[in-house]
Image (cartoon, rainbow, N blue to C red; front, side, top):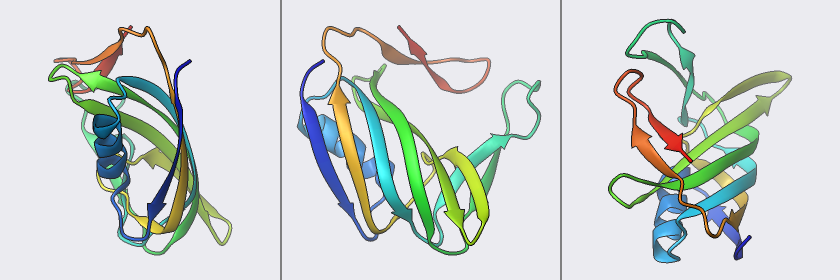
Length: 140
């Protein structure tokens, strides 16, 4: 284990953009990430494949219609281009309704998102493009 970062994301910030920029600035090549806070109305999430057997994968998307309480876990690993990629799934809730999905398509902070980044040292894993699925997948 390497460094541990405590990051506060603020209202209106796009989660994956901010965390990938933070990782680039601090030269974080691999890490585990946890987050708690809220996502705002208009946030987009990937919520599953249209058909789990089809290749390439056609994702399903959902847009939040109001602010939701949020908790998430994820990873940061370098892509083939050497830039950090956040892969984070979150669960969101509001008034008894829940939703879980990947935030990579544009989730925006409502008020605050508290994030802890746990750097992994001596880790050579990278995100590599998988032609079958169209995903960047982890290659340990």
